[in-house]
Length: 311
Image (cartoon, rainbow, N blue to C red):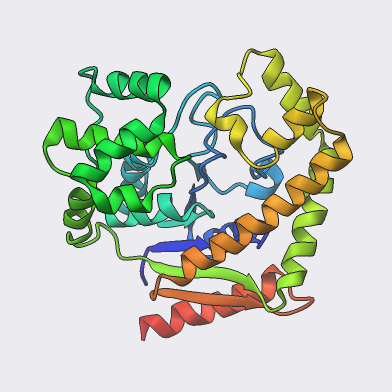
């Protein structure tokens, strides 16, 4: 049997429950692949699995960064890759579970990320953006890497500066770097599962209920505690869905009810984007949940697929 399994899918689709159930059956360990569950002190709003939900299964890549820190896909891969390799070296099954498709794809491919040099070029580009606007940097990028300039939205200042920085430091565009990276055979060859609901509205209703449950569990005190500890509302961690909206409410810029509706809507839209991302992967075997089905039924189908793939 393949000892590496990816469990992907949209938010609130049941990835954690399936990952734990498979880990119990296969003697596995779970590696979280969620760009916000990596932050400490952000448990409720990121739907981080509780001790009870982990059911004694080792979970990795949870709470590995401070809320004040910026985190990147390259840092995730640098930390998660040796963990996956260690699990496999011990004869265990590594189950990578989460909804951050960019992180999961990069981990499986084993991306060789362009370096993050500290020669001052980035600071110069950031200063240019502050003084003349990001359009000034984007204009430079159009000259050297028109593909990236066209792909990146003008509001995506961080990636525009990054793309220009890579060219200035390496003489190679980030488009070329990505093309060469994708030509390299992937580091890992997992079995891919992704969860979805037969009826999309069922998923959306579950998402709406989850937001209300998070509020009942203490999401607002969690966010207030982060602010009180000195975490800036502009920090990357605080841009997560469910945090930035309720920060506005806590700061009096909108009501709790308005923020709740915004979080529910943003979460539904995010789920749709997640489904679109994972549908691009032809290796994914979709586990479609019919109305009323629980983790047990999904587990049976996953188990059958794993048996069939071994034959």
